[in-house]
Amino acid sequence: MKLIKTKKELRDMLKAERQRGHSIGLVPTMGYLHEGHISLIGKAEQDNDIVVVSVFVNPTQFGEDEDYGTYPRDLSRDMERCKEAGADIVFVPETTEMYSKGSATFVDMEQLTDRLCGASRPGHFRGVMTVVAKLFNIVHPDRAYFGQKDAQQVLVIKKMVQDLDFNVQIVECPIIREADGMAMSSRNTYLNPAEREAALVISKSLLNAKQRIKQGERSADSIVTEMAGQISSELLANLDYVEVVNAENLDRISEIKGRILIAVAVRIGNTRLIDNIKLEV
Ligand code: AMP
Image 1: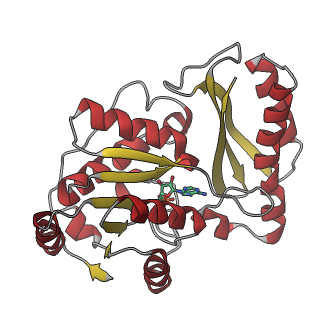
Image 2: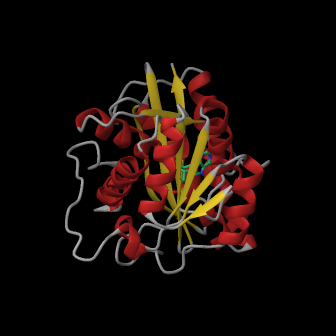
Image 3: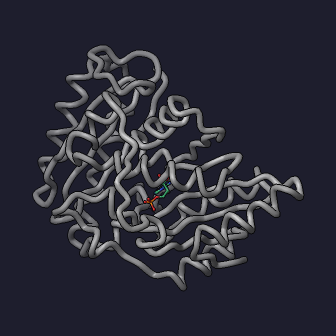
C-alpha cells in the first residue's frame, strides 16, 4: 500500500494502472476511520483492481463556527486500517496541495441542497461537491463509494455526476452501526459518556418510527411529531431537524408510501449527529 501526497504522483501512478487495464475504485473520506469507512473500502476492494482511499479534512465543507479545527485526525492509525481493509493507495493531500493558491471555482447545485443538512449547514454541499468533483478529476475512478449514513450527500453526488457528465458509477453502501444501534461516525469521539448514552435516542427514535410504520402508521406528520417528542425528552439532545421525505428527491411527503427516507439531525452538547433509515412502504 502506498501513501501519496501530491496530485501529480497520484495521476502518474493511476495512469500506469489504467494502462494495465486495471479498474479503479475511490473511497473519499475525512479520515479517523471506523468500521463504516472500512465497509466502503471492503466493497471497493471486491469490485475493483485498485482501491484509492482519500483522507482529507476538507475545509470548504465546514461552516465558520463548525468543527474544522477540532475534527479528529490520526493518520498512522488510518494507514493501518486502510492496509488491513485492502486499500492500495491512500491519498493524503495538504490543503494547499488540494486547493492551489487563488482557487476560486466551486461546484454548486439548486434545490436538492436547500433542505435537510443543506438548510442547517449553508455552503456545506458546495464544499462537498467541489472536493468530490476535484477527486473525480484527479483519480478518474470507475466507481466511487459513499455511505447511506450521509443520505443527502449520496443523492447530491449522484445528481452532480448526472448533471456534469462525470464518467463514474456511484455505489451507495449501508449504514454500519455500533452494537447498541448508534450509527458509527468519526464525530462520536467528541461525546463524553453521558452524551454517548443520550445520543442513543437518535437511533432509537428511528427504530420506533420503523416499528410504527410497520404497524400501519401512514401519517408523516405523526411520525415526525412522535420522533421529535422522543428526542426532546432526552435532556442533552437538541433537535436540529427530523423529516420524512421521498427517498429519491427529498421532497416532504404527507402520506407514507413508496420509497421513503426518515432523516434526523440532533445536537448532543456541541456535537451535531445525523442518522436516517430508508423504507419501502
Ligand atoms: P466521512 O469521513 O465522515 O466524510 O465519511 C466518508 C464516507 O464514509 C462517506 O461516504 C460516509 O457516508 C461514509 N460513512 C460514514 N459513516 C458511515 C457509517 N456508519 N456507515 C457507512 N458509511 C459511513
